[in-house]
Structure formats: structure tokens, C-alpha cells
Amino acid sequence: MTTVTVITGANKGLGYETARRLIEQGHTVYVGARNAHRGEQAAKALGARPLLIDITDDASVTAAAEQVRAEVGHVDVLINNAGIAGPVAAVGELTAADLQGVFDTNVFGAVRTTRAFLPLLEAAGHASVVNVSSSLGSLAINADPAAHTDILPAWAPLLAYNTSKAALNMLTLLYAQAFPRVTVTSVDPGFTATDLNGHRGTQSVEEGAAVIVAAATAGPGATTATFVGATGHVPW
Image (cartoon, rainbow, N blue to C red; front, side, top):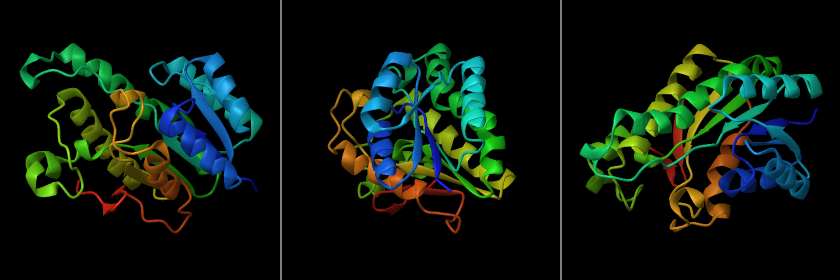
């Protein structure tokens, strides 16, 4: 049976490269995008299936899950890749509304998507959820950045982004505990040159996508509730 993979935010950047690599390995990939035209273009270029999904909208996520259910009936791998950086400003200058906008995508979007696709993941027998996080979401690293330069060479006190990724990591732990037949993993692609950071990243998308692809192809025996980067485990 073909492995069915759904990737949010897959019309460009890390999501696109992850889709390309998984298709090479034989996956049937749904390229999730909130813009129908861009999603269709990406899917056509990749040989994937387009999936219109705005993870900030309940109805859109529900409709996307229903489309996949009607077409293939199950999902083996869900990759919660879509995310935003949010405003960059001094910690004391950001408002609750600033954080709410980032959390709506990076945290609540992952909740909407995971919840909607859980029945399809459970229908697969043993499935995987890969949450694309960041070392900037590690409490241990934020508590002592100087001690973790081997994992995160350049730390930044990004109130909205860092806290949203810390919350995403907690989702990984709690979903893993609640659904033992689903392997749930947080991955850190590293500082990758994408639109998210104005292409200032020091890694290529090929390098950044490697850890996502590895988690997506780890198989049923993979350890759940883990946080993994390019060089190994990342501290929570």
C-alpha cells in the first residue's frame, strides 16, 4: 500500500523540498497550501496532489480532511509544517495580539490540523505526526543559550516565535501520550534560508528538510515524543 503523506505549507520552502524527497521515495503526497493556485502549481511540478487548506480556519481544515478521506481513506504521515515568524521587536514591546496572531498558525493551526486528521491517521494502523518546530522553542536552550551553541549557534529572544514553538513541543508530548499508536515527533530543521527569515538562513532547504524526511520515514518502530535536530536530540 502506498504511503499517504499530508504536508501543510508545502507549496514552497521546506514543505516543498520535503514533498519532493518523499515523492522520490514513493509516497503519495498531498501538498497543502492556503492559496489554491500556488498549491496546484506546486503539486503539478512535484507530481503530488493539491490540498487547499488554511490552518487558521476550522472549515478549511475540516474540508481538507474530508477531501483526503474521500480520495484515499487514510493518512500515514501528517507533517505540520506551515508556520510564521511573527513580529520582530523587543520583548517588552510585543502585545498579546502580536502573540495571538503567531499562535493561531504555529500552535492552534497544528491543533486544528492534527485533530481533523486523527481519524485518518488511526485508520492507517500506525501513523506518524511530524511537527516542524525549532531549537528556539527549547526551554533549556532559552534558559542558557551560551551553553547550547553546538545546537543553536545564533539565539534570538523572539517572544512570539520562541513561545509558539515551545507550545508546539508540548503538543508533541501530549498527543504522543494520548495516541500511543501514532508516533509524534518535533523536529528542528535548523537555520534554513526560506521566506520565513527573509532567506537569511545559513542552510539550504535540502539540508533543512533532511530531518523532516527522516522523521517522516522512520516507520512504525520509531520512538515517539522526541525532539530531534540535524545533530541528534534537542533538549526540551
